[in-house]
Image 1: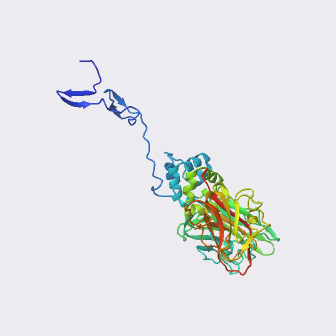
Image 2: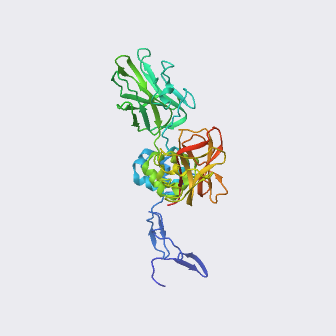
Image 3: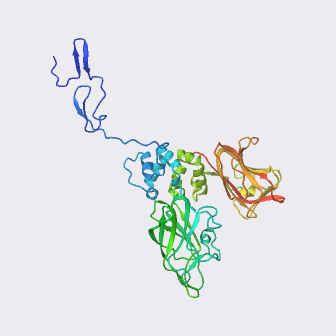
Length: 446
């Protein structure tokens, strides 16, 4: 009998009672601290580290959770809990966008998109949606004038302290809770101003009834210009309002609170230049996000949209130069000038349903949006953007529209070589339809 302190096989008569000779366990495959016997029968101690399970980005809940998002990218112990922290760390941000699993979670997390204008352009305190809230002294200076989109309104929201005691409030209540991490304000300037209030409290409410201060902010002192205040908030509240406790000082009018225009913002992925660059460099990320209607809309509206939409019509100097082909119906019109990059020259086609103008890329691209500048500033006639590969069969890529300067694809159903603006409904009596600029943007893999 061989003298062997390790026993890896025990046979009794013709029966094998124990056989470790085919075992594959090693210290490297055994969990750290656990003990077992390898195929030689030797006692071993595991050294393998426990790997945390990675959530399935397509199904894990809840969504809009920055911690789960990082775990989807294999980051086992995330240190960031807010989107702002992730956006500030380009290394982590790039890791997240490079991870297919993290992108699958990201596309479902619509709060990550961000919004440069959470409040719609208001036409009353309650239309088109939500509600302007605060202190109103007079119907001539209503709350909604602070959210009407105009920096030239001669009757901005104003409250005189001689008529209504402090504090004065101006704010907005959403239909559902929203995160706000920036405020833009445009303060009015008058020639008799001798001072202006700069410090106000930002209050927020989860139910629209009970408000509490979340920050003290300094309003920009540069009047007649938009100013932006960055907040540390990452909580979704139903309502936000500014609290004025002292007022602007005007020699001829006394003390009052006033706001010409303001906007609540959530600065997210689509407002971040680095994030948009990383999306544009990653085919899985760009294709996944652009296939989603909410993300596609946000990307096309982003200041940095060309980081992702990498195909457009070149600056044309004729129907065929420098590349591709400008086409139109009927023939005999000058249409290529809509693609010349010059807003002082225009192109046109006769005003009739079915007439069109477009561009042949000479290669297949995925259309995402069109940007249009009308010679008259607007148009009542209606159009659709259509795509074709053979010039005979055309697919509708947008809903019917008129007057829009940006129109986004309603679906991403394929790739097309030819993209055209087609008149679908004639409304005006104009003989011709003139456009300063038309540009088609799309995407092709890098």
